[in-house]
Length: 406
Ligand SMILES: Cc1cc2nc3c(=O)[nH]c(=O)nc-3n(C[C@H](O)[C@H](O)[C@H](O)COP(=O)(O)OP(=O)(O)OC[C@H]3O[C@@H](n4cnc5c(N)ncnc54)[C@H](O)[C@@H]3O)c2cc1C
Image (cartoon, rainbow, N blue to C red; front, side):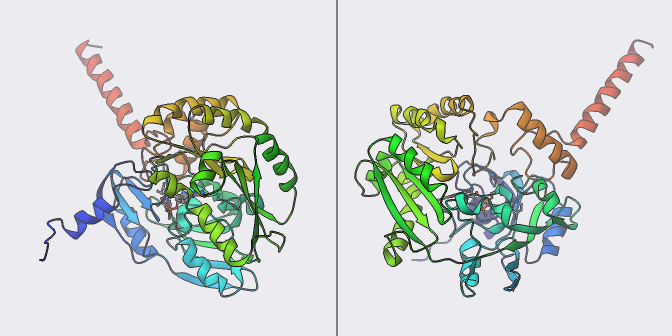
């Protein structure tokens, strides 16, 4: 039997792009899949309320449309050139990280920043969120590996942005323009091995971290609390998964690949157990015990990139009410409310005034008419809206003056 779908292709595209991995529901007014950077520029020039979309793997709702026009970059996914001698790659921003790395791997190279969403996230989305991932302890954030980006501004023009101005786009979550093409620095792909460390109490974990963080070949230190350890089939202890860019770890080859795949499966596994809301605070090591005590007391499972201070407490819908309390604790411990996922829609309420002001300054400079991703990170009043209000106020004053016979 043939089932006839009533929705048109356009309606289905709008439904598919109405949310991202955060699960926050939005509404797309229209969706475009430009085939070239120039076409993306023309679309940007002729629309307002634009949401740039990469792989839609964001966990903060940054790509969720608010009755917006979505520009999906999935067709801008070509590698333009790879310079093996200089170790750089020139590519369109919609390329998926794993696809880029598959090509680079043939030349013994890689883009080393490694979010667990590597199979679905795009380089453009990674730059827009300044993604971090499990190897940050050695390789840092995405922006560290970007030479320059070609961006589309509100007039649809394509502008080249070098390192000096990269912060106007890296980490701005698509609120200042569309990242269309990129030149990335690359690393030689090393041989990797791993070790698994088990500990009964957090003091042992802190001791191990103190030593491991100073060692040059350590590229990943991932923490699993007792509940997450059990979920992965380990004993009910704390665990550290330590990755080496050397032969030092005793877990090698196929067993190594399996362990890393198991690590990448944690969030999907927790989500299937009902812990669907994932947070990403960054906490100083000296304050981590207090933070983990809070989570354990409240039955909130946690894992994360402990080597760089980023943890992932995961909340069920019932436990969601504990998030504001956790954010309060993060601030009290002088941590950061987001270490890697960004603010998007989900963390706006926790941003303080100083942070809002800093973002507003960049937004005003790069997108003063609030064309790109309005309503994300901060509630930015566009100059047009401000002009309108000022004109209205002037008109009203004028009218009042006429009434009063001034
Ligand atoms: C299972 C899972 C694991 C994850 N693990 C990690 C992790 O380890 N580390 C980490 O940092 N993140 C992680 N994430 C979050 C997410 O994958 C990253 O934020 C990623 O960088 C988003 O890329 P994307 O292409 O999917 O972007 P999207 O989700 O499409 O968009 C994210 C934001 O970037 C903007 N954007 C996207 N493309 C562009 C562009 N070309 N130009 C301008 N703005 C753009 C969007 O408007 C939005 O605000 C994980 C997510 C999942 C689902």
